[in-house]
Length: 300
Picture 1 (tube, helix red, strand yellow):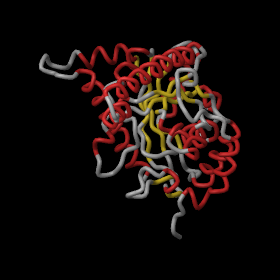
Picture 2 (picture 1 turned 45 degrees about the vertical axis):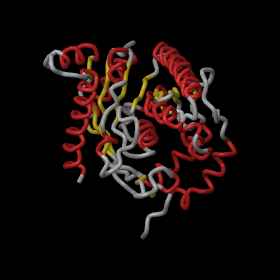
Picture 3 (picture 1 turned 120 degrees about the vertical axis):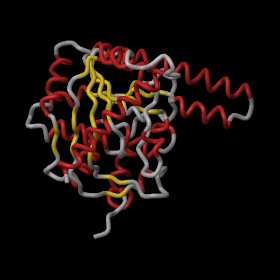
Picture 4 (picture 1 turned 135 degrees about the vertical axis):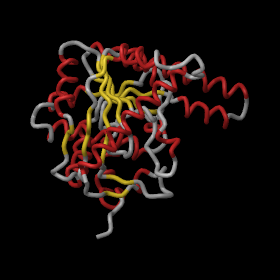
């Protein structure tokens, strides 16, 4: 049977989600923290549960448990996840709640994702989808570079740069508040979904190095499988993604002591290394890729 697009299969859900939507359509320094819209999350949970193979599981479950126990004991926790699909976050939250032998359900509500402002500003349907989960919204460097390139004047480019700076300063303050509340920050280090045939979309952003400096512990989480797949040529239209039944596996590294891990890796770099921050995140992405490959052998 041919797989349907999310638009075809769940169009009525999105109509209801648009009615429920309360998230800001324009991001500024006053609204960077956006708590989950639980009404919309109910629809996303249904999409996930309809398509998630019941054999989906957490690989290295004890590593997840240890990480969250350390957060519960007062450590600031950072989750760094691979990114293949628009349902990576919904699947992760759903499986914390339902597929973790009851060991991780209490932590699902503690997760706050770092999200680019495009999710709010580009499309009302995408905004309604994204607001189902708690987020701190940032102005990504990639977006600023594109905005500056498209600016009609130097003054317009400077205004956009100032806007980005205000939003990101507010986002840092919001993230600090999340840490004080014992929430866990989740980041996709590539900053975008991986597109087959475009290896640059799987490269980590060097800005992620700053997160490693700001947190006590981290968990590197690889993802195998997804209930949504991009249609080639329609990557920018989220509602064209195809719904597929799939077994999804989230695999955790051992708990990382951020500052120690970063220091030890940077010490291995020679004096000729031109960009230590990029080298650091390249190393993290290599760890994630290796985990992914090892898990895929088991998953199949």
